[in-house]
Figure 1: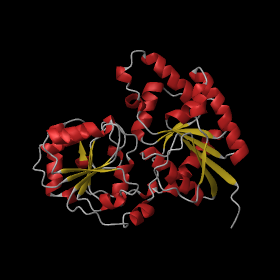
Figure 2: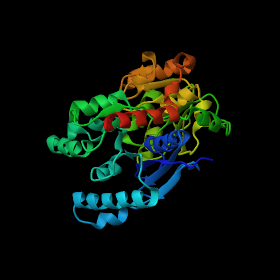
Figure 3: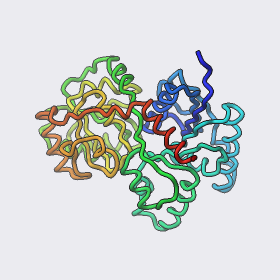
Length: 361
């Protein structure tokens, strides 16, 4: 086997059960398939995924550095430690991708070359621009971070929002998250769920996913199909209480977080998403890879870029969502859509390399 001479480093805070974390692992395989030596560096030990043995994993804890007074000083010192770790333990990287808020703050001070930020969220919604008192101060901080390196946005909606609010401050390009179709289809064969003829929702119990809207809309239907919720998070107790208040305890099942949710998605009548904020909703693309029909809210970024208009619902509109749920329960096949093969990991990795090559010339 030829020795791999090119190095890709993917940096993220931890590997807990989120879409960005999953995309890092999937993109890592894409770079591996292109012949790269791939390293995933994280700052917290938490891991909730089965790790791909083709990739190398590193932990450099940020927690001890929290004792350093001053946020900027803390980040500068840790950035030097990160740079030194990468150069001494991994080697000179050909590409470094920073994912999510903590690494982005760190890599603002990195001296490494070939660094790019991956913007996974619609920034104006993630940081709640409309509720911030000193919005100019926040935007100035974000401009200071994201002007340091080129930026990749995971959807056109994320990119348009970035440019609208922060301006033309850096080279920027839309590159969607990678989807390992073949791997997903294989994992979906792992078991057959005990449930039959059901609706599936996959997502963390957090505000942006709007489980409350979903449950209130579902309560307005005839509930002819049960609703399965896969996920975990800080709002779980609120969701459990709402299920009780809406008298849905016999119809809604909370299944917790599953490392392999794909059998549930494959065997569902359809998948539903009711988020009011997404970057690139991987659960939708993964359902497409499994041939599962989908209905989704038309939130600012993501869904409209992969689904037909008839599959979309207004954000936060309980009656419209209830109506679409009822349509899908009667005939889910009308909400089938095709998978885009340009999302395969190797193809997405190629787009990253082409973008970094373009901006370095």
